[in-house]
Every structure is written in structure tokens, then in C-alpha cells.
Length: 180
Image (tube, rainbow, N blue to C red; front, side, top):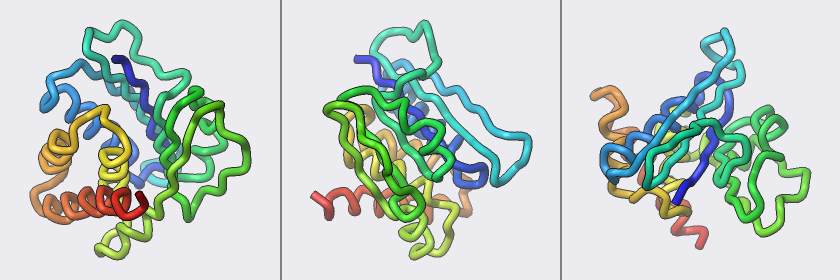
């Protein structure tokens, strides 16, 4: 089954890495097909950043995400730009302390807010909020297995921050389980 995911936020939040982790987990560890496209502003930090991830059981002919099954949004600008692109029945995962939902969701869609930046700060580094979001994604969906996502987190970050990122990933999973 084809799933289209968009991850968006600001440069410096780990948006691109979040998309890469999801794509890597699906393709390398779950044996599925995946594409990841990225876009970002000319500034290294603070500009708009986005990753488009498509996952399918068959080869992917068109990698662009126009209307996402799953939106992972980490900034108010990302919500303004992409909030309306969620498909009916889709899932919106958003940074609840930065984004205020001010428009109705498409029919059958659901939203899950998580204070990812705060959870990351509690672990000592705000920049790992992307790993928290990957954990939340793992806890709310079955698109990619949690085990594959955990392996991809461990393989996608520098050795010096591996344990911290894995802890952030697990914190995201725990947050979902605690909210259920």
C-alpha cells in the first residue's frame, strides 16, 4: 500500500534527517520501496525545510507528495504552508507547543499534538526533536516497523549522539503510549 508523508519545519530542526530516517527504515530494514525528496531555503538554519517521503510495496513511479497521508509538522510556517494538504482520513502529527490548529481537518482525518521540542530539551538537546517525532510516528502508524525505525535512527546519527537520539526516539514512542 502506498503511503505519502511530508515532514516540514525549519532548517535546524532535523526535518530532512527525519524524512531520511523514515525512508531508510522502510527501504533498508523493512524491505519496501521508498523515495525521499528534500527542499530547504538558502539559509542553513531558520528557513523553510521539507522532506517528501513515499513508501510502497511496489516500485514508485512518481515521488512527489501533493496530498499527504501523514503530515509531520514542526513549525507554524509549515502548518500554514502544508496544513491544507492532508488527505481525508490522514494523520497530522504536529509540535503542539509551537502550532495552534486553527482550521478544520479534512473529513476523517485525525491530529496528534506532541511537545517534541520540550521533550527533547528535557533530554538535554532541543535538536533531537526530530528523533522524538520519529518515535511518535512509530507509535501512531504501522507504515514502518518500530524496530526498523529504531535501527535507522541509530545508523543515521553521529556515533557521539547515537544513544541520545535513540533515547529521544523511545521518548516519542512512550509519549504516544502514555496518551492512549
